[in-house]
Amino acid sequence: MNHPTELLPDYAAGVLPDPAAVAAHVEACAECAAETESWRSVRTAVTERAAAVAAPAPAIFAAIRARIGSTGSAGSAARTRPVPRYGGTLGERPWRRAAGLFARQWTLIRWPVWVVSAAALVLGGGIAARVSSLGLAPHALATVIPIAAAIAVAGACGTEREPVGELLAATPTSPRVVLLARLTLVLGVIVTGGLLVTLALTPLQPVASALGLVTAWFGPLVPLSALSFALSVLWRPSVGVGAAMALWLLRMLATTGEINRAVAAAVEPLWSPGSGVLVGAAALVAVTVLLSPRLPRGAARRTGF
Image (tube, rainbow, N blue to C red; front, side):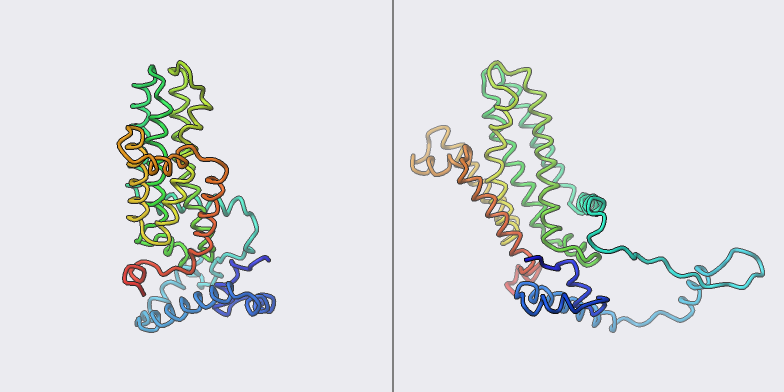
């Protein structure tokens, strides 16, 4: 079933030119009906907020209209020109729209996320370079890059300052699309940095190939980032970071033999994931994205309302 997600804001606001098809879908689809009610709540809140603000003085509008309609010729009568407005159809130029969405996500993600990610990649590359002659570079990269990705995902996708909400307030973009764009951007940056570090280390390796180095850190990156993403979005960022750090610490202890073998065996599949773990990680991300628009945001989530 195709859901008219991007048309629901206009439909809820009563400004959709031809609402019949969307209305029929909303009546038959509980998911879209719930999302429509959410947009109607937004419309009501905005309307009430706008009504509580005093209207500007008429002179302000007169000055704006005069500035817009001025021909620039001395003594000529001012004429009113139409104010430009976006008249495109949603769904057109998908690549241009996707590029714009990624560009906005880049500016909305807070700078500490990028600083921490860059520091972790540099640290991991430095450690791997020092131990490369011993054949331990894959282990060093598998230790640092996945946890860097998990922390970055938690910081970007689970932020409680709600830059996602800011973007949704200004555009009719689906919250699921925004969340996926943010996850893709963060992981894309981390993976690109990891590949650059791997390429720099490959000539120093006596045994491991470039593919072997990439496999060593990309495998655990997937389930660890998926878990961090789910907990950060469904609960809060601190829980996502805490869970990722706890699993990372258990993995470190397992390599030294200082924890119970059963615990070590339970953690090991995350660092050497098979198809079942990878499919489970993908399913966890999908479920999180599907549930995300229905979750309370910001202060409401923290207080339980």
